[in-house]
Image (cartoon, rainbow, N blue to C red):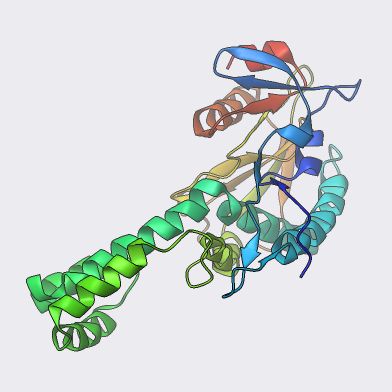
Amino acid sequence: MAFEKRNHHYVPQFWQRGFRDHADQLYGRTGTTTKQVSTRSTMQGDWLYTVFDAQWNPSDSLENALSVLEGTAAALFHRICVQGCATSDTDRDELCSVLALQACRHPDVMGRGHRRARDLGGLIASAHDLTDSDFAKEMAAFGVSANDALAAYKLLIATPREQLAQELDELNELSPQDAQLPEQEALRAQPVICAQLKKMEFTLVDAPAGSEFVLGDTPIPQQDLSHGFSVPLSKSVAVLAKPSTAGQTSMARRTATAAEVDAINKAQWENSLHVVVGSSKAVLGAL
């Protein structure tokens, strides 16, 4: 298996490039500092998508697969980030797919999956200390139905307490890169998230003259997506998503208000992990 790539971007470089100025310069704000940055060194981490087999052989297979998907996404953004351009039903479906992948490929999200697995393991190991109804209530937070939880409970209380404790210790000792529970498993949520996004109402908004959008390193909120969210696709175009009671297969398009641009940029700043990028030092400095 090939293993050559170290520099992995959790927000694709093509996406970041859409926020450069007319001279192809990109600025980033971290804390109170704003300076020129390169997409090569922003919104990235070492070996984020390196996967290992049971013998601890590393592979670039996931990073390579993501690169292919990014090529398709780049073509999509190129089409729909032309202000005023009409979009198709296929464009909307593809955008849902891209945003769903972005929602689960962030390092925080991947790490959370590993943490939640440990939390679930702790709950399972404590079955002997809980009633069946309490166990079912706790399992509901992990998306487990009451019937499945009660069936699991019967098996767990028939298992020696010591054995459950030993298995929990083994789980807690697993590396995030271990093939038994790799943190990249979080990416398997992409189809589920995509299906939910397709149920929402999408509107593309074009930045009015004199305004522009910025992009944070956490473009998609990490919780409550179904309540609605905004995502800048380029410095001139963003998408608004909100709950919908009726099925929608197309995207509306209009010009954003200045207040909407400010709100979208503020959300990018507040949700960011380290950096927010854009084409204007002044806009970034005012966040």
